[in-house]
Image (cartoon, rainbow, N blue to C red; front, top):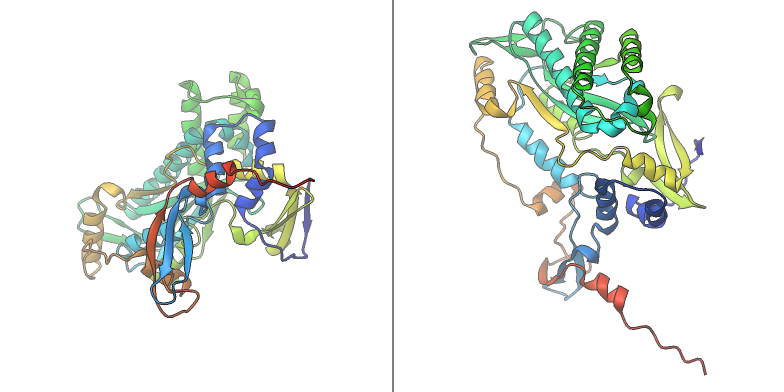
Length: 408
């Protein structure tokens, strides 16, 4: 059962608390893929003594405290800040002095049941269809190869399935002979949305039919109903009749705004700790945006098991790459192509050299705080005194001798 209300509570907790509270019963009640078990475990033990760490001591006042290691999981809300900043730093030198557009390609929700047992195949088809669509429009309308990068998201603010691809696109194309840059003739949009939608739909369904014909699709649980040829053909015909959503946002106000915007999308997970409000009576409460009601901020309450089920819908296949580059921004010749485009635009070429930042400097940039300054005296620096080995404190707690109680 899911309830909505607009009144906010102030008791905060984290995703790890939800997994610890409801995780054991959830795992016992159902069979789970190993990837889901690993994600839950990683989030539960992140920055705890289970993973080990360092004991840090202030050189001046002698104050000490443990600093535990992070799990590093890309599904953990605590482990995305450093990865995000490092990724954005790499992209900073690659920005071009042109307008940038943001397109969003969304799959119809009818495909959700087919995507659950075929995540890698459906996501690959989505990347392939979107990239082919944009590259084809670039060749036909701009006479060259476009460059863009894409970010896969699979959720909406209520953790329901909503598979879509964010595309960040410089407004122009590089000619085949690499001697000419052709900018977009439009200021408010890159290509007509309706035309993009039709071509995207056709390419996606073509690749989906090919995957079915080659026996690559798995049919399980609710998707079993589409396994037969006639039923699958009826599904395809029904999808051809639908209007597929391609959303075009207004162009960014300059290249630097692209980075500011990307910070909200690149390493986002299904839900952040800031949105989780509390656990009470077996339920979890978190905030969301209601798009049907003027994008107002509301609270949603659902059973703990249902919250975990929805969160795990968005666990990616192992080692799956959800940020990809295409066209002249593809990994193979990206540096050369960016240098070439910048030269054609009359700006300094891409050097490939970036100033390396320490974790301390990055965290200072993110939080505005010196993470090594002693929180007690606020004068000197905390330094690592000795290692805390993995599992040590956790095992001490689990296997410590029982306390003897005098019952006489």
